Image 1 (cartoon, rainbow, N blue to C red):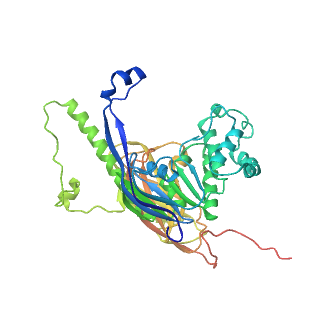
Image 2: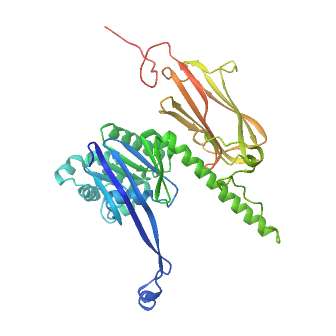
Image 3: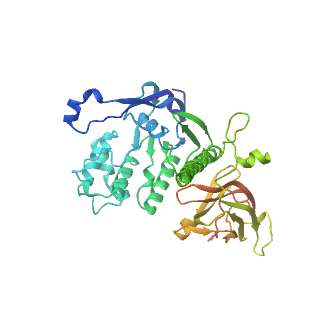
Amino acid sequence: MKEGNAIEVRDITKTFKVYLDRSNNVKDFMIHRNRRRYEKRQVLKGISFEVKRGEAVGLIGHNGCGKSTTLKLLTKIMYPDSGKIEMKGRVSSLIELGAGFHPDMSGRENIYINASIFGLPKKEIDQRVDDIIAFSELEEYIDNPVRTYSSGMYMRLAFAVAINVDADILLIDEILAVGDIAFQAKCFNKLKEIKAEGTTIVIVSHSLGQIEQICERSIWIHDGKIREEGHPRVVDPKYMAYMSQRGIEKEKKAEDKREKEKITGEGEGKETLTDQGGKEVSEKQETTGEKEDPKRFGSREVVMDRVLILDSDGKEKESFRNDEPVCIRIHYTASRKIEDAVLGVAIYRSDQLYIYGTNTLIDFSEAVTLENKGIVELKIDHMPLNAGSYSVDLAIHRPDGFNYDFWQECCTIDIMNEKSEVGVISLPHTWNIK
């Protein structure tokens, strides 16, 4: 391995047999053994990447693209058909909820079994068992059989064990999607803590916000190959744009199908427009020649027409002291009544550090309705940041993540701080010298 690397993946491939006539019982298997037809499906088609020691990498991609298979190959749950994987150090993994747990054994007994699988001797487990139980917050249930646990309790115990084995490499597959919000936040903070201690992390997640907060790099896997890799702020929006377009096309096909069922004898529908390279383009592009903005995407059923940054007097400005209120005013137009809208905001420093994010679903616990033309205002009491330039992403999307209008870096806010403080935020403070 190269000096400084924790993981090296070289041209791995993986193919699965997908059975079309699976036998349901022994009788079917014996009588119709010649009818067990299957097709070979290549999930990974030659993937290569490296992960440096202490680096956090996020694997992203649509369902079935091969990212979870890649993670399972790293854990050696399965092995590649070809290619080579090298890893250096103790590996801990959270791949499937409760994997390795025995349902009839208690939570305490499963801690010992799971930790021993990760390579800890009994003496070390004895020293850590109280910390594991305390982190899981399952003191009351720790001696009950785990088959009596809810999925959230499974997750608590599995995560508590995995992060307390002093692993050099931690592999995680969507585990943070389970459990209550408070425990998710606790787990995520713990991840950031162990990353700061030098643990290498590879995480599969559909939560791009989580990846942007913890990962230095995103690897986008598409149909078994790496489509793109780089900084999350570069790769993630491209992936979101692809998924948004995919969702639009899927809904359009469904709508076309419904229309054809209503109207018999209709032609095959509108001809697909393509550019000179054969790539599909929108009617707006074809008729006006307008090029799509790479930082803007969505179905456009509701559109942000204009975004203004205002001060407390309602005047437009770009520069603010860090103790001044800021108002982000969004003018929108909806082509139809949208009853499932979520408005979101994300703020980044000039070096693409994720500073803050929220949305109306978090704040109101329900979607909002937008129709015709209107205005939405987000009023921020003050931005206690140190001096710098901060970009703002805005989005109008559905609760399931389908984007109506996503606008990356739609505006910039310059923050001034009269003090020469360092770091990200400016903390109110006093000194008391005696």
